Image 1 (cartoon, helix red, strand yellow):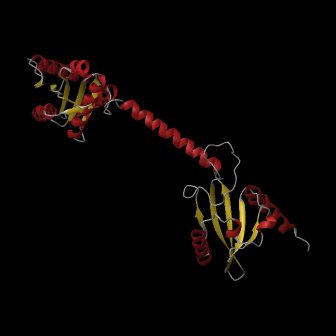
Image 2: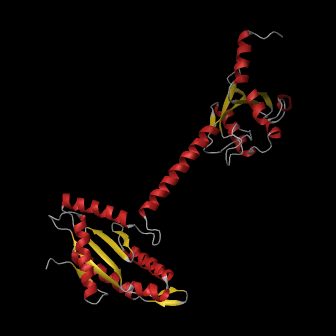
Image 3: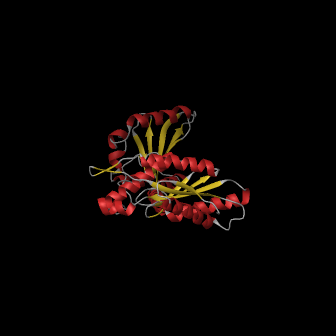
Length: 319
């Protein structure tokens, strides 16, 4: 039989297109497959034609695909599944054999109804597009984004206590200071540290000291409000930022924290360790030079707490 030029061109294009094409009848027997399918499945065309799709590719999700095919047949409309939903349907090899955890070609699959002269579905065309390069690129981008996010998180947090580190808590305080400067909003700042912390390290060891710092950070962190900001300023010293909080309220809160810590019994290696806090409180006032003045004043108040016997809260006063 002589093949017309249009038919020849159509077959040539379909056979050489860079996508897999499989045509099945309504009993799921394979009527046609192009060279792409043969190449990447490593199954000869003669072995596929006339055979049932699920016999040739027994790993296919049969129940799920039958629902897809049925929908395409009845609705006479295409259906689609992305590699983001299912990495692949067909276990086709890919062109990146050295690429990490990619076993098979990532695929976008489209299911199209093939209509007869009476506009009835008599077969279904499956188009398989190779999305491996795109999928791997997307995964690499996601991995880079995740790594950057992790690095960013690490740059914000203190490795021991898992609260904000000095650099970030100072950055937050500067922003809150600028906010109060422009809007006049209330802002209180607290500096506190552990009393006789060197004695704890010398007596019980630095691992015990680390555990004490973690317990203090956890206790204070679990008691502050969502709008409050809390960080390790250095060594055994901590900084607490309390927006929209007047000095009196801040002082009362600090007294509660001080009492809670005083009542704590920190267990380490079958040893019970008791600790206390000294705290210094200050507040934002119009005309302050910068956020460093708040830190300086809180530190002065903290020093006064130490001077007066420790385990107490002192509010900064110009006098």
